[in-house]
Structures are given as C-alpha cells and as structure tokens.
Image (cartoon, rainbow, N blue to C red; front, top):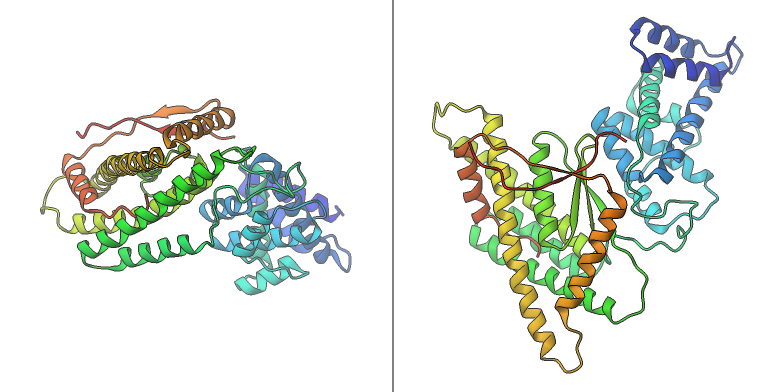
Length: 417
C-alpha cells in the first residue's frame, strides 16, 4: 500500500491530468488512506505539509500572503482561500527565520486559524464531508504549486533585510492624517449630494497632496538608501481592462508606475510610500464611484439603443478612467506648482521640483529592474454612447485623494467606435 506522501502525489498528478475517472480513483485512494489504523490522519498530515511547503516556495518568488489569498479566491472559491489562510497560519508557527512586521500584519488581517489539526478543523467549519474536503484540498494544492514567479516587491521571510524591512507602500497607514482622509472619503462616497461630495473629497485631496510633498522634502534632507516600494491592486473581472486603465491613470497622476498582469488579476503599482497610499485610496474610491455611475447610466439608456450592455459598460469605464486621469493630472500639477513656489520663497528650503524629478527617475529605474519585459497594450472602445456617458460621469466624479503572460502597462487613448 502506498504511503501518505505517495497517495497525495498520485492524487495531485491525476487532478492535473485530463482523465476525470483516474482523478476520482486517486481521490478514492486518499479517502481510504494508507490502510493503517491512523491512515486517514497520515493523509491529512501529508496534504498539509505539502501545502505548507508549496506556500513556502512562493515567498522568495515574489508572492505575499494577500496575493495568494486573492488569487485562490479568484481561481477557486472563498472556501479554498480560507484553507490557504489556515495553512499560512500553520506555516507561520513553524517559521524560525526573521519575519518582517508587514508580513505578520497581512497574516493578522487574513485571520487564518492556527489550530493544530488544520484540515479537519477547516472541513468542519465549512460543513464538508471528507470526500469533498479532500477534493477541495487537492485542487487548492494544485493551484498553489502552479503559480509562476512574480516581482519581489519586499524582502520575504528568511532573506536579507527581512527583519528590518519597512512597510513599503504604506506610509504610516494608521496616522491621524490618513484616518481623516479615509473619513472624508467614506462620507463623500455615501452622500447623495454632489456638492457635498466635491467639498469632502477636495479636502481629502488637499490633505494627501500636502502629505506626499512633505514626505518628499523630508526624504531629500536625510541620508537614506530607500528604494521605491510597490503594491498590488485587484483588477478582477468583469471589465478587468478598464480597471487596469483606471489604476494606470491614477498611478501616473501620483508619480507612480503601474503594470498590469491580466492573467493573474492584479496591477502592480511602483512608487514612494505616500504616493502609493494615495493611489490605493483613489483607485478604491473612484472604482466605487465609476461602478455606481455606470449602473445609473445603464438604467438611463434609450430603449433599443442597439448595443449590448457589456460593450456599453466597457466603453463607459474606459472613458471614465481616461477623463479622471486628466483631472487628476491637472490637480497634481496645480498643487505641485503651488508647493514649489512656496518652497522657493522659504529661505534655505529645498526646491521641490528637482526632488520630485529625482524620485520619479528612481521609480522608473525600479520599473525597469522588476519588469524588463513589459509590453504596451492599447484598449479598444466600441460604443460611442458609453464613451460619452463615461466621460460625463468622470467630470461629475469626486477626486478622492490627490510566469504567465508578460505583464503590461495600459497606455494610449482608445478611439470610440
């Protein structure tokens, strides 16, 4: 009789193949176990150990806990994602090497269970019988072991710099200033009065822009060896391309660079911490506004307009993203010029524009290092009515805060057809 490790390997190979009957037979073997008195327990232990090892191999290849959680939920389901969270918590118990604080922050937010018998506890909470639990666990393991390398944005556990790594991409995320910004954005998104939303989000724009410029000047006056950091933002279907374009526009307006990995369902944004915070807040809030405006516009369409809803929606969201990008660029330019003038009038102050130029060059160098094979992609727009409606919605929107295929930068201005 095969041992537990061999049973798991056989089931995994069968699931990866195309013979459905063979896959079912191997899963039946997992159900039976090794034939020993503790044969089913041995199978659970072997499955968990292999899943933990698979996760451990992902960390040096660029993956972070939140990335794996998001992708497993996207490719499989929320139940599989909860299994991965529990497995990551189990792995953390075994980690002796230096683990950066931001890593533990991510695991804490995911809230995986740290109980001893991971598979049994997970199956019980999910209400799964043993057959369904084993099938889901093998599918999850197959996905984890298939993930390709991605850009390493921060030193993972066990590598040089892990113990002292800053929380790149989150500039004092718990600061009172950012708490004020989030409160302003929450009110702006919930109000039904455009004028109130404009005032609230205008104040948020002012706060985050001032913070970003202050951070740049502070860094320029200190001896530091920082490099730009990065964050990954979800661009899940539907309308993944339009979401990626929105990320691109928001990133460009905040002196960041964005690269879309469409097959993995996220965009990577590179920049300095305060700017990355602005991009995250902006993208999240503008996506809420764009979706709400799209649904309102869809309801107001003329009967029998002749275009499918999906085509109209895509055109709407692409136009929204491009117009918002223009507004953000204009707001950023005005705020930067005002700040540079104020700095020039202050005796002995560092001029702002050269500082920002140097930081921008550092971001572009980081892009070239992490994504040497990046390609450009032009989106198409196929509905002029949707394009016009999306542009108008963007003009009304509040400015919230001022291995597989090659990842891509979403560039260019589509022509509505």
